[in-house]
Image (cartoon, rainbow, N blue to C red; front, top):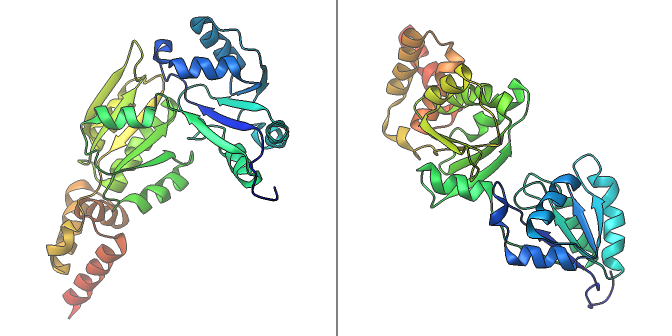
Length: 291
């Protein structure tokens, strides 16, 4: 875009219910009714919601999901530049938050198109609120990498994160992810697994990560999953000497049968220090024993 005048269209990100259709707001209904184009992740789910709201939108539907998001974004941008009111909805929650929408928002902003949102239910905020964990500061990490190696690496980067952390996870990967979290953060790190939030079979399981990993592994967990994990205690290990850190590692090796790398990761997570610092303490202790 050139000049100072905004483009004539309007992009509306519309939050939809994460469980109960009755959580849909009057503003959501109004935006769906007045849209020129509704870009939807799942046309069938949208039609069900429209039946509940007793709405017949005047605009047309456009399928807009992960696999076609890149290809469809230029077409939707052209609609916006032509003056259309485009409403984006996903299966549940706020578009662009681990859902389609970000690419179109970025393109619209770059083109000078006005972007607004219809606030709505959020699995992230709902899970944090009911978790029982600190809510004054938290971060959203979305979905972890699907493969074990990538997942462990990402979690290792977060081991010393002091804020409460929120993750989305697929049911079939939940047990493995919780086990990897327990290895990276410590088995006693408090967490909550929030399943089917706001729905009839809502379940919130709270406990240490080790306990939750065992629970998930022993049973079949279904539905939409949000995991909330307490942050590390900042600098808890600053009062420990290098020798004391090394002793904690050696104790975990002997008592838990852990490999040194695993023991170092657990100690680092528990005391809130970088793994490199704990590793250096172990090396120093070994060198000292040889003197």
